[in-house]
Each structure stands twice: as C-alpha cells, then as structure tokens.
Length: 173
Image (cartoon, rainbow, N blue to C red; front, side, top):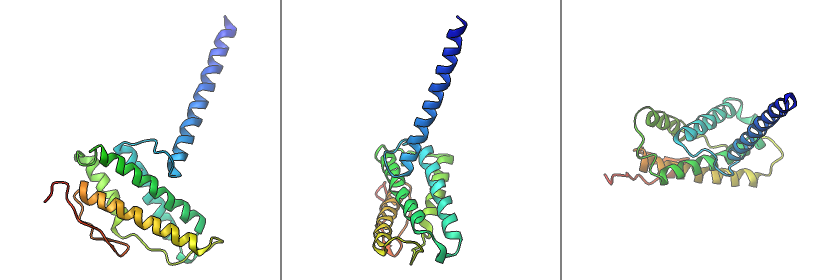
C-alpha cells in the first residue's frame, strides 16, 4: 500500500509537469500567431499589454540599433492579436463590454493605434524585402484593428501610418 502512495504522487507530479508544458506550448503558439488559445476579453487585454510593452521596449532605444529579427517576430504577434480581437468582435463581446474592461481595452488600443511608428530601416542580415513585406502586413493588421475599434468600441481613428481608415459606428450614427 505504501508503494501505491508513492506512485500516485509521482503520477500527480508528472501530470502537473505535462499540463504545465502543454500550457506553455499553447501560449508560445498563440504568441507566434498560430492558434489563438485564450479568446476572452481578459486574454486579449493581456496580449495587448504585452504587445505594447514590447513595442515600447523595442522603440525606446536607438532606431539605428533596432534588431530586424526581433522586430519581425514582434510584428508577427500582431496578426494573432488581430485574430483574437476579430473573434471577440464576431461574438459581439466587444460591443457588450462595460465598465473597467471597456476602459482598459480602449486604453491599450489607443496606445497601439495612437501613434504607431513607421520604421525606416533596421540593422541585421535580413533582406530589405522581408522588412518591407512585414511592414505592409503590420500596416494591414493595424488598419483592421483600427476599423474594428471604430466599429465596436466607438473610436474615431481616421488614419494609421498615413493610410485612411473608414469611420463607422456599430449603431449607425
């Protein structure tokens, strides 16, 4: 009987390790723009905060020292963030937001869309075409997020990185 208790504890520890590893793999996949694992308002808010913090850290230093691989990886995360927000919007979760969650989400979106910085050049071994391609994809993601914010969260964003955004209201105002 004593041996059974040890096996049960070992199994429990193994299960906890496996579940922790699975959760870590899932969050890593979500960060890479793969399957969106946490499609809740709180999950989107956490992802927005993380994205904004990384963007601030990347752009706080000397623009001449901006590492291209890290920048490209960061911009890929925006596609996952966009997918999360679009799924929430499709379910009507963004339009139904009230109180503190609405304020916090609008704040993080304002930081993201308020004055995005266009990158003129980077340092690294990546080809200029990759940077240009990623910048175009980033612009499209930002435009889609801006349209979503205008429609579902009562923003009035007119342009992102020099590209005009249609202003629409969910209520048809």
